[in-house]
Length: 439
Image (tube, rainbow, N blue to C red; front, side, top):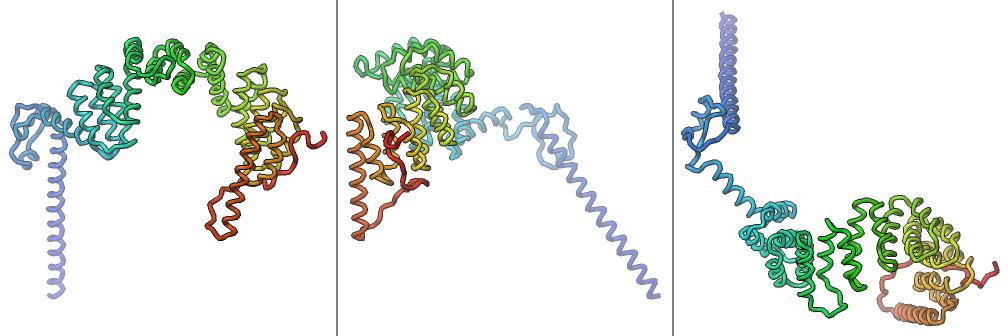
């Protein structure tokens, strides 16, 4: 009897468990269906005419097709999107994330209407001062200048210092892309400097013209007086040509006026090639005739090579024919090598006979070793041939020696020791100046 009772209870328990499991599964399936229907509802085309269901349960039970429409709280979906977008831009303009902020500025200023410009100015004024908002300033002024460059310039004049210079350059860049003649005329009329002075407006103008009128931009740059403005303009133009290919840069350099501008262009090309393919740059220099261009290019190639391997660079320079190109290249080798091994550098220099073409490399060596060994530096300084250069270099060595002696005395008297920056490797350089040892 007891066994039958126990069996009955066991079967009854299994039945209850099975019934409970089935009810839970049915409830789960029902919720899954509702969620699926709600998800499908969110993907349907929404129109403003059809009233919304009253409750979520009704939505879950309804059959919603792609033609169904919904209106919520009497606001059409289009209106909601517009409100959300406007609020989103306002929030993003003030975001602490610079990427988010820049995207918002770009979105707002894509259409530079008066309202959008005003909103951008308001957002810009609320940003923390400093370099962190310079990108927004460039974007604001560039966009504004597309529709009203003079109005943009009037606003920029109210800014201070570096912001005014950045904004001005951006405006002139943008203006010159649309109407370079008008921008040039304005720049000349509004420049306060006298004739022959550097007009800073032309940096931005040349940058803008370079995009679609490289020849005109180059002619304008070539007419500028020698100075910082022309140098910056030349750098901008070179980078524009290099983006178009090495052949374009070469052609551009060939057609520049001989002298500092052409030398600069070839130096830039030589440096670019040397960083990509040092062997090809060396071969290019070796095939050049002795000239200012060769001097300019070989100097940069020697510097790049000496940074990597001063011993090999020194061997290449030593095999150059005597002349200005070798002298300038030796300076770069000495500058890099003496910091690592002044002894080897001194021995290498001593291979060459004395002469004025050796004065500059020797002077560079003196300046590299004087803080570690003023006595050796003085010995080499006195070997300089040009009397004016020798006197100037000797005076420099004496001043450094005096400061070192004062520091040593202060340390002996117990004064706090100052930080030093000892040279790497080498130690005391051996070997006298050129001509002091027999060949």
